[in-house]
Structures are given as structure tokens and as C-alpha cells.
Length: 488
Image 1 (tube, rainbow, N blue to C red):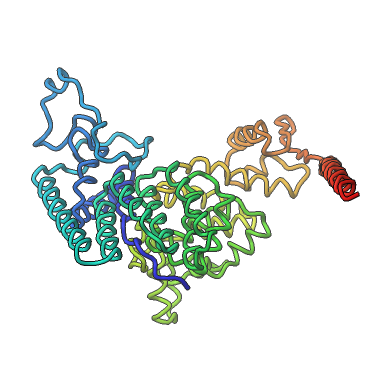
Image 2: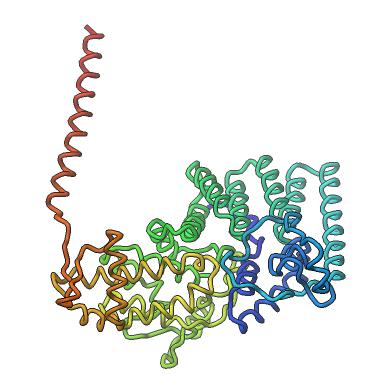
């Protein structure tokens, strides 16, 4: 085992989730998120983030030119004067989804006095950190100087200043020797990128961390990086690559600064259900012990905290663990698991079991419930929710059609609990895209599968690979003959 992870406390990703919920969630959830966000801003002195979110003219949570009653201008005056842009914002980010509906002005009230007080507190804390660094340079060694610089980097990450946090972490990285500490710094930079939803930046940093880990990283940091990589791949729609990483992280998960364990289970289940082949799906998702702990077994058995009211004989230790693993809306905020609110996992369990067991009507109903309960409420899943639902419908269609040569259109529609017209239109899109090989006969009311000839494709592939092998052998033979002539 390597050294204990460092720089794992900030930024607090639950704050970013609260901002997302405030901008897209239902009204009841918005109020809870607003309360949490306001408390976090005051507790952690987040002056830059507060300005970025709530400023009357630059705040991303307010329309341009809108604010609270104290700061809003008369309508006639706002029409006569040009509206200011948000280019002067202290942080560049994608905290609010671009497809969100228009928000009423002042969704996060702007308080000028509070902002000024937060700024003063930030300046005071920076002065103390600078004083500590100066004293360390005069009286102590490089270790103490780096400790003071680390405090500054964590300070910028804590208050929500993206650019200054990254530059401070980079400064520490350049002057740090131990590989484990360097990996921790890059993981912190990745979380800053995740906080502000900068996918391109996160991709570069994940690749950077991977190079460091392959250069000699210990088991713990290698294991933590798998969760980071899996979550990033999920945000860029690479579910097939993310699934094995996320599923492999379940048994050894320690990255509570990244997300809660229950959130990791949901990400793993969704990625695995969408991308794994049926045999792997059975092994890694349906029968996985770590997933059954959260979702329950085929008979609907759930642990306390996941919606089960019948299991009364579970030990207190198991119960306390289960109730700490069933949260989706609140992400982990530190290196240890935090208490979480109970979440109903029945739609997710139904999605898995109904797909595997061929209960397609229940599968479609569970898919709609999963979209409403999970995909639209999680900031990492929200952007690709429409694509996920479409691909899951495709998987259901493919699973049913692969068992038949001819299927009645009406019987298939009944199996999925949809109308014939909807099924006809939906299948037509997938057929046109080449994702389902079948033809629809509306006159006869049938669907006939037209599976591609696997033998021909296998034969062509063998010939192609054989040609490549022969070419390589010929080049190798020429190289051997040349060396022989040189020796002669």
C-alpha cells in the first residue's frame, strides 16, 4: 500500500450537483438544493462561485440583466440600455446545462453585502496562507513551504475559482517529487474539471494521470483512477468502455471524494445494462453481489434504505451500511462515506431483471421510470438521457427479434406495451440506421428478421487476416536472408 491520498477534500462535488438540481430539477428538489447551496457558500466562503452563479448581470443562474428585487432595473430602462455580457465572469464553466429551461430572475438571490464579506474573508485567509509560506521559507524547509502552497491550492478549489485552483495545483506538481503525491494532485485537478463540467480538460488530465499511474503508481491510486476514468467516459457517452472500469471498481471503491457508493452502483448498472453482452450482463450485473446489496435479488428483496419493508431481521451493522449506500442526488464530499438519503431503486432493479427475463412491457415501464428518477436528476447522466433511452429500446427490440424469424407486429407491440404505430415508427428508424436487420410488412402485419450472413463475413475476415499474416512473414523472411548475407 502507498501513502494516504492527499488533496482529496476539495472541490466539493455535491455543490455542483446542487447547482445542477437548482437549474433543472423539480421545484421541491430545487428548494432543498438552494438551502444546501446557500449554506455551503457561507460555510466555505465561496465568493468567486457565488458571483459566478448569482450576480445580477453575470450570474449563470440568472438571466442577463435579471436579479433580485433590490438589483433589478425598471423595464423601460433595461430596454434602452445594452445588456452586459458574462465575459467578465471570474470562472469559465459549464455548470448549468445549455438545454435548461429559462429560470426566473433571482433563483439564487444576490446579496451584495454577503459577497463583500466573503471577499474580505477570502483575502484574510490568503494573507494568513502567504504569511505561513513566508515564515516557512525563512525558518523551515521545502516540506513546510509545499504544505503552505497546498493550502492555497485547496483554498482556491474550495471557494470555486477554477483557473487559480488549477494553476496552484500545477505549481505544486512541478515542485513535488513523490509519484504518489503527483497522482493525487492530478486527481484533484480532474475533480476541478468535473466540478465545472469541462470534458475536454478532464480527458487530458485523465490521460495524464494514467501515464503517471503506469509509471509506478501504487494499488490504491491505480484503483481510484479506474473510478475517475469510468465516470469521465460516462459523461462522454463511452458506456461500453466505462462499464468494465466502473463494475471493477465496485468491490474496492474508496473514491468517496468523487461520488457516493450508491451513485457508483447506479452508473455501473446503467453502463453495464446498455453495453454488455447477455452472458457478461448476467455475470457482472444481474448476479453481482455488490449490485444485489443495493438493488435486491430477483424476488424483489431489498436491503433497508432501498425501499424494502419486509426484511426485519437484518443486523444493525448491515442496516447502517445499507442506509449509507442508497443516495443518488448527493455526491460524496470527502474521503469517507457520508450519510445519504434513501432512494427508491425499484425502477433500476426492474430495468435489469425485466430485460434479462424478457418481460418487455415491464422493461419499457422501468425505462421510463429510470429516466425520470435517475437520468434527469444526475448531472453526469442528464446530457445523454435521450440517447440512453433510445439505445435501451434498441437493445430490447434486438433481444426479442433475435429469437424469431417472423414476429407479428401487433403481438410485438403488445409485448412491449406500445401501439402498433409507435412500434412501426420506432423500428423504422433503427432499420434505416442499420442497427436492426429486419423488414416490416404492414399489409401482413409481420416483422421478418434478415440476419446478415455470418459465415460469409467470417470467411472474408479470415482471408483478410491471412493476407496480412503472409505479408508479415514475407517481410520477416527477407530480413532474415539479408542478415544471413551480411554474415557471409
